[in-house]
Picture (cartoon, rainbow, N blue to C red):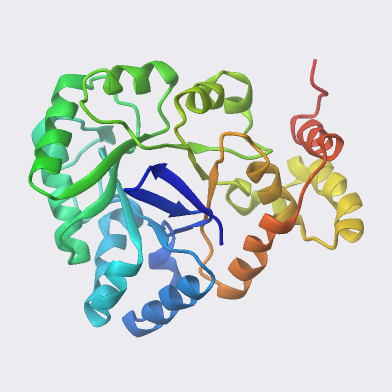
Length: 298
């Protein structure tokens, strides 16, 4: 599988990233999860995406149980995690309202919690999960630099940030932010037009792409019928499936977006990474975009 270089000589990701947002729903034993990780590695998927908030603050612990059984896997994968979202749940009994926390001490404590939950010494990348209107960029930068100096996090990035928010935080740091994780798909195309992906391309920052298949809604939601019909015209001619075609849509972006695959079904994953072999021509790409948006480009 192709690898994408984020920091020359220091950090690269597999072009497809395994997402663990739904891990608690997969009902895998630690042994089964070890087997799943190993099967992903056989396919070339080395990068794993997590967040403290996933599974109502339970996902990282489940992943850690697998790593405890097979600690050799840690050196074969890149571990990405995110923090700053809080909401009322059993694991956070003191939280009364959903909110964001980007305070310096909270970020440090959240990163340390992720390390404990997964039973590892270092995160390869830590992302601020959501833009926070109360974010003090100096405080976030202080947290990042402290975590880096202590060897707890190697690199840092953001998720769902605008260009201005990305630029603000970058201005406070002595090292480069390595990615911005964004919702990118034919059905969620705002970043194709608002300058976000252009800015990242200008900065040579490769985005991680979440919900490339619309959270699965593209397969059945009525609102995406035109998109399914459009893709169906291509499927037979290209020997491709709907999910492959829509992942190929994301892969075609010059920003080198890295799709996060959220499935726990290894055969589905095997099929989806076949999108790397599908090349959409410009008319096919714009036809998908038009079908998803319901209007042609201006």
